[in-house]
View 1: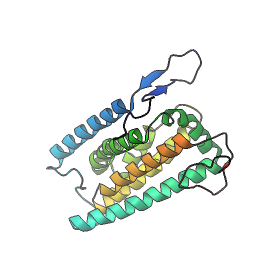
View 2: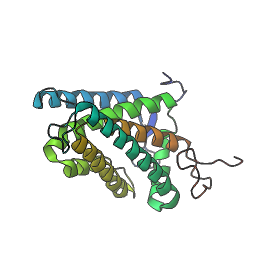
View 3: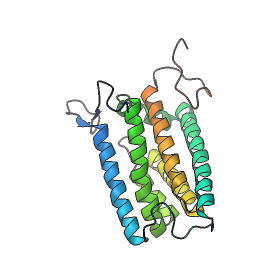
View 4: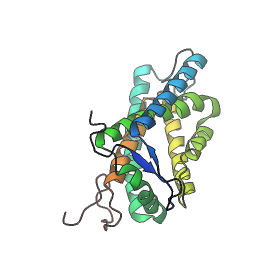
Length: 226
């Protein structure tokens, strides 16, 4: 699977980035296991509350058949993933807070293997989408569940509220796809694609190198000498 194939298989988290503080080591598999537990609990509650319907909205905006709803949700989810990934690259290249945030997050991603990134992307999508979309959106609505999604994505540092606001917008859009089409397939795929692609970008991102203004929007940051 590629998981754990690199010599370094853990993320060292510095609580405040200060010197002299012993880092807290977080293993990618432990994070994935926590997301898997969240997914299981959320799915169990959704089953209990909605007669077994976990991936479908109990009262969607559009009365689509199961196949049509799944395809519509998938198409919107993949399209949204492309927009989010492209926008992220532009923000990192052009906006101060986004570039600073990428530099702050890079240490967490740089030690990950590709297999670990896939593992984290899949299970984080399952855990968060089953909780925020499948479980909370039908109860709280698209806006409130999206705002809560943004709030739990805060990070320490000066960029915390910018990042929380960006995550809230993404959460609202994912919730809208779920509520309109009635299918969770699109949000699940979108979330996994965005997490995976952005973790790869953060891992390979070179903040000390000069980036082309519009180049490499969907690829790695360019390195010196090509």
